[in-house]
Length: 193
Image (cartoon, rainbow, N blue to C red):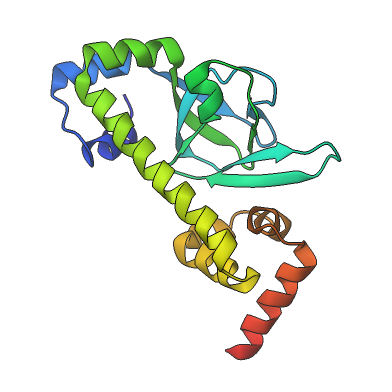
């Protein structure tokens, strides 16, 4: 099993060798090419995925064909359409690779089995899902309370490694602004330095 995933899990729970073996028996290792979809709108999300390398975007496509990015995922982050995965219902979101990407994936059935066999893994996933929920709530508050410039500065502060890896128009979509407005904000910040 991948040491990177084990190191991540060890931040939250400690597994003995037997538990690591059980965990290892329940995961898939998969590589995707840039542009490939891990999840597509309308399909059932089959995997909760841990990013070993690469980057992905999670987005919603509205009726006008406009893309609304709700999340980015890079190394040591998780990605899925969580609502679809948990309910095993059609996905609202698309998850697409922005770079060649390597993932460790847990299928729904394997994860349910792990929860029964290894209560520590159920605890681990509860903790990371709670943290993701809190981050989502804070993002909603920031979207209501901060200016576009404030949201951009918060994004740069929280995710400095992402800005160098994804195109500016995607960051603009994530922030809910146009790419032209983001360009204006960035120019102002450069001028202020």
